[in-house]
Image (cartoon, rainbow, N blue to C red; front, side, top):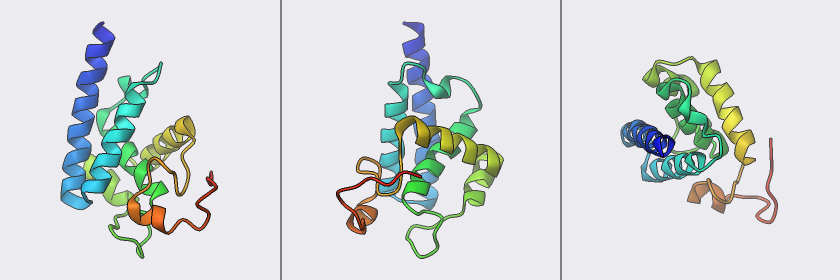
Length: 134
């Protein structure tokens, strides 16, 4: 029972952190996708964000959603660099990139993911019937 309370507390804190960032630099859709990913992570048997710094997890969640939605490509809107995310949360760019990879591998997330892509990315999917992993 205590684990469920701890998971909920940490999840709410992470939602607050990602929401603040998305409100300041991204948009409502990114905010919702980050929250959706956090809730999915909280249902894992071994909840990954129970250990480690919350700032790293918050940055990694935003990074994960960003990678699969081309957030770091200047031709897409919104745009922000991975360095901007790490600076905001006071984390290392390589650390958040590594955690992001763990999350993407955990859920088999790739470009044009049906569950975690923005509407704009879904519309531009060149292969709507396939899922591309990286």
